[in-house]
Structures are given as C-alpha cells and as structure tokens.
Length: 72
Image (cartoon, rainbow, N blue to C red; front, side, top):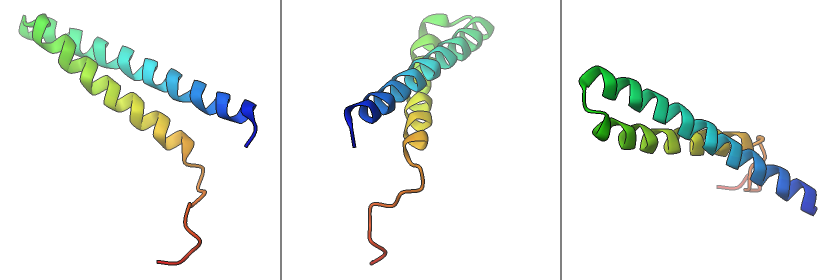
C-alpha cells in the first residue's frame, strides 16, 4: 500500500470521527435542553458521538477484504 492510500484512509477516519462528535454534541445539547440538564448530556452526547464516528470510520475501512485465507 502506498503512502497516498494510507493518508486517504486516515483522513476518512478523522472526518467520520468529527462528524460523529458533532452529531453527538447536537443530540446531547437537545436532550440536555429538554431535561434542563445540559451539563450532564453534552458529555454523554459527545461520548456517544465518538463511538458513532469510530463505527462509521471503521465500517468504511472494511471493503470486504478478509484478512484470513479462508481457513478456520
């Protein structure tokens, strides 16, 4: 794998993580405003968003290429 492919994959993971964090903060702020407890829900939303962003980036890396050679 050449250097350009490594950079593209890394950039994709970073953007997925950033998008997930933004979505999580937005959801946390909305729930926090509704429950009048923003200081609790912003970090919870951020944690959920990081997990979501990591999952989005991880799924895009898996292009169906299996690391095994077909043996169990």
